[in-house]
Length: 113
Image (tube, rainbow, N blue to C red; front, side, top):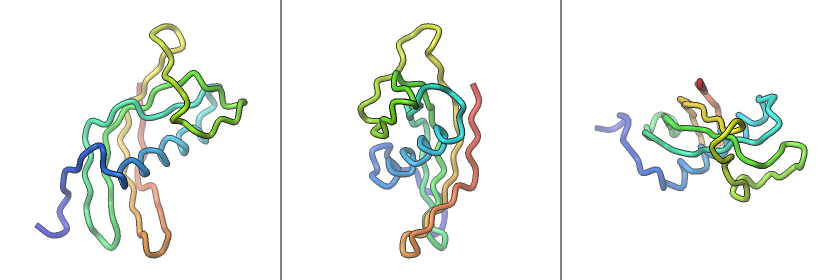
């Protein structure tokens, strides 16, 4: 049905970019000394509505990379091993993209432990 949300693969390139941008947003708002990145995508949907709306349920986990080291490539950051520094948040993300206007808006980004 046109305009209705459709499930998409966690390997979808557009979804991967949305999730990466969400991790950067999370890190910019966090006071944590370490960077976080997505560790799992549980559900992902895409909806075509005057652009593209993504709805994603994911986990974001603490990495071993420190913010002060200015390592902006999250792909190079391993996750913290199990222990006192290990931390994971369950997050719900809704993003609206209008690619032809180079517009991106986070509609909802809620994370909890």
